[in-house]
Image 1 (cartoon, rainbow, N blue to C red):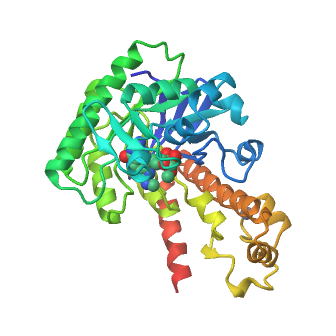
Image 2 (image 1 turned 45 degrees about the vertical axis):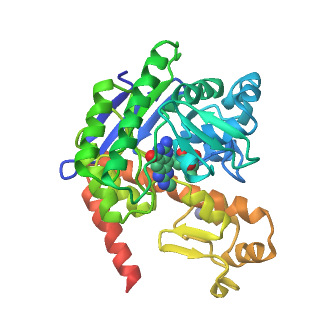
Length: 375
Ligand SMILES: CNc1nc2c(CC[C@H]3O[C@@H](OC)[C@H](O)[C@@H]3O)c3nc(N)[nH]c(=O)c3cc2[nH]1
Ligand SMILES: [Zn+2]
């Protein structure tokens, strides 16, 4: 819909591409990883540090911020950027996923979703228009339409019904959007269709015919086998315009991201680097490991010798293990900084490989190193 995305280079051997997404808060090189700040904070790490790690976009969540502290508080604070002191791009998810993953006792109606708050059980009703009104109060730069995140598995007939509903809500979202002055904010549609190739293709085509600024592929990374995730991704992306950004929601491990980039995805969000850090699991160039392992009790090396992040420059595995065992809060900060640095560096390396026309060699090297580790 809006020409905010420029294709800079397409890989010769795969569908991978290097792009530039311009939002009203800055320019974002793609493929990009977006740290998750669901409730308005990248857990345990201040925004200046997240920006210092080169993050250009973070992701917040309509459902969580709607329930607490409420959109009016954030609107009166001057919007989410001011409220959380993040001056760069913010993408807000619509709440479609949380209503199905968090809220109990829900009812999907034509008009919207009725459910009970996971915080206090209060009865709530979320419509496509209300989700966009909340995102408007938050003042995010990229907004997602309210969709139905179809669970896995789901019978074909129910998949068709929920996908049709998602399309009706997408249409209502766009007509609401056209009645507003979005002031340069972008609106993304979300492809559903469950695990049925024909429903996936039809969903992508329907959303493209409505014309959005970008397209997310939803309803994946919901417990399905990897080969199904990538097959449904391929058939969805095949129907999406090359000159619009594609966002694969909730994915994933470094390998999943690499494979999705190879299939033409530009944008990623995932809780893995931040959530795993708080659980003591770290990502490194030698694979991932759990810091509480006794093997690290007197291991005075950094988490990853190939990492130059603050944590790796100043602290050893032994110290980080000690903090984790002692329940010292500092370890959340130190491990999250490292995992985010790892993910953001990984995407930087992917963009560099694409820029230099050696993406396939980079991908082969990634698997060769993985093989080596396995021996
Ligand atoms: C993990 N797998 C996965 N995440 C997904 C999310 C974001 C979760 C959202 O919830 C929070 O992360 C758990 C973040 O705020 C994130 O934006 C999705 N969101 C929407 N609207 N529709 C989907 O079909 C959908 C599918 C997903 N699959
Ligand atoms: Zn590090």
